Amino acid sequence: MKLERFDTIDFFRGIAVLIMIIANSTPYLFDFSNLNLIRIIFSLAAPIFIFIAGFTTQMNKINKKPESLTRIIQILIIAIFIDFFIWHSIPLFTFDVLYLIGFSKIILFLFNKFNLTKEKIIVIIVSIGLFILLSKIINYRFIIPDLSVSEFYKNPLIYFQSGVLQRLFYDGWFPIFPWFIFIVLGSYAYDNLNYNTKTTSILILIIGFLLMIFFYFYYYNSSFPVREKYYEIWYPLNGFKLILPVSICLIIYGLLFFYKKINFGIINILGQNSLFAYLLNAIIDSIFDSYHFFNLELNQRILLFIISLITIIILTYSISLLKLNKLDRKSTRLN
Picture 1 (cartoon, helix red, strand yellow):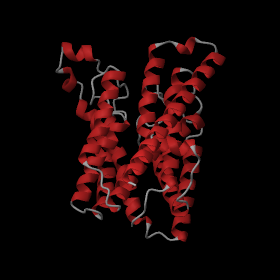
Picture 2 (cartoon, helix red, strand yellow):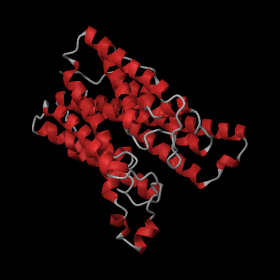
Picture 3 (cartoon, one colour):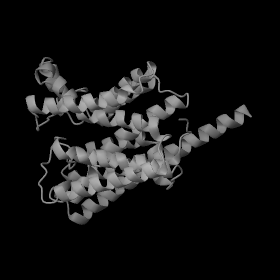
């Protein structure tokens, strides 16, 4: 299937960015630990990001614009930069979502390099089985303290003694298992989007919505533990929790068949500049983490949150304008 980049991808990614900003910032200002609906909404950002990362990787490949290893390595470098310079922790230790996307894109790069398309469904099935096996034999470590630079200097061996490989594959912030499944699923979805019919897409949408409704009522009275300062319910992602990322991926997949040009201005701009917005959000959250804003009055905390959100939106919009002006100047020189 061959498609140019369509607005709906930017729209969904922009929605994910907006959810991510709110979800990452609010724990420093508000207590939503007992509000399951809000926590479930906060949890939608990651699967949207990851599914679309796989989808767009395959889309670029089909459009003869395959992502180079250089571009993929840039994502990992940004993740390392955020860990070291913003959070002042040792990189490649707790494995945030950028690491997952970077490593997963390397594997998709190899899939595309050797034209392994049908094999993706096998990888998905095997990965699910391996994840179930891991959950039976490996203890999930809920506490995930960062390794500071000073600790590392005092004892470099602590990096390996802490079980860093287990963090990468199983119990980091976003370990390869089971999250890798959804980036491969996104790639597989693009491969098969052209073969969908209207009836099939409607069925996919219905299944996705039914699964999400089932998930909500199944966990309606449940209590989700809070890992560190994050309200997302992915810690750990096991059992019926897998239904939520599956459901949102199915909903997006079904909607992409019907809508190619959803454009809501600033939402799409956030989606087009998601990496920049992610970096800004990390900087602001690190500032929140350094001060005790939770002790402020409620109206002050609300104002602080609104200012931080508007700041990210304005700066992201500004960088978008700069990119457009650069493209216009380049186009003018060519003409």
